[in-house]
Length: 301
Ligand SMILES: Nc1ncnc2c1ncn2[C@@H]1O[C@H](COP(=O)(O)OP(=O)(O)OP(=O)(O)O)[C@@H](O)[C@H]1O
Image 1 (tube, rainbow, N blue to C red):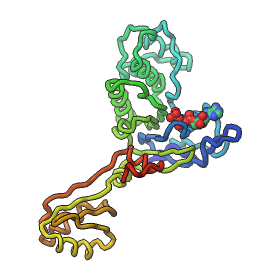
Image 2: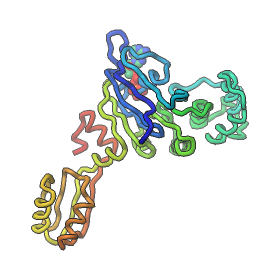
Image 3: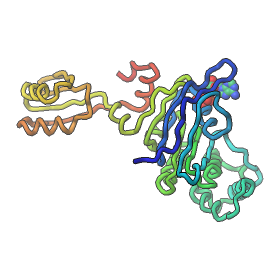
Image 4: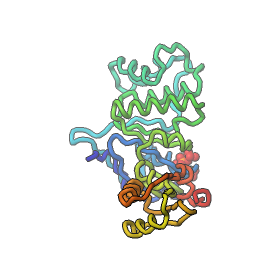
C-alpha cells in the first residue's frame, strides 16, 4: 500500500473578506507526481505557499508524515529565486547551499549535473530563461527533498526548455523517489508526467483524481464494428444490461456509458461467435475535461 505523505485537511485562506481557498482537503502518496490545475486566480500558488510554510492558512491543518523518525523535507520553486548576476550556476548554488547549512559541496556537483549546468562558466546575468529555470530547480533540489513543490516551472520556456525540465522531473521522481506537486497552464505537458490531478476553481477543490481514473473518464464513447448487429445487441442486453448503446449504422454499435468494459465485451462477442471487425475508443483531452469540469462543457460533448 502506498505511503500517505501529505494530508491537507479543510484548509481555507482568507484575505480580509476574500475567500481565496475554501475548505480544501486531499492526500498525496509518496512517489506521486500530482498536477494542480486551475485558471488564473484559482488559488494554486496560495495553496503551494501554505504547503511550504511561506504563508499560514486561516483554517485547517496540514500533515506531513514519513516515518516515525522524521518528517519529509520540502523543496520548492514558487517565485523566481533571486540569484547573483556576477556568479556562475555553481557559485550561486554554493552560496545558498552554505548559507542554508550545507557542508559537502560534492552534493552541489551532483545536482548541477542533473539539471545540465555542470562546467558552465557563464555568469547568471547571461543566462537564458531556460537556464534560469533549471538553476531555480537545482536550488529547490539542493538538499534532495522528499517533496518538490513547483509553481509553473515551465512558464515562458521554449519547447526544448520544457522538454529538459520534464526529463529532469521524471528522473528525480524515478531515481530519488521524489514526490512532486506541480502547477502549469500547459495541460499537455502535465499529461506527460502526472500520475494524479487536483482541479481547483475559485478556491474550491473540484476533483482529486488518479491518472488511471481520469483516463477512463476521458473516454467518451466506444464504437464496435461487428458482422451481426442484431445478435450483438441481444448479447449486450443479456450480459451487460446496464450499458447504454445506439446502433449507428448497419454494423456499428456506439456505447457511451460504462466504458471500462472494452475487453470483456470483445471477449463475450467472440465467445458467442460474433466477429468483431473493429473497436475504436474516442478520448477527449485533459483540456476538454478541465473545461467540462469548470463549466465549459459544450467543447467536451
Ligand atoms: N497577499 C494577497 N492578498 C490579497 N489577495 C491575494 C494575495 N495573494 C493572492 N491573492 C488573491 O488570491 C487569488 C488566488 O491567487 P493565486 O496566486 O493563488 O492564484 P493562482 O491559481 O496561482 O493563479 P495564476 O495561475 O494566475 O498564478 C487571486 O485572486 C489573488 O489576487
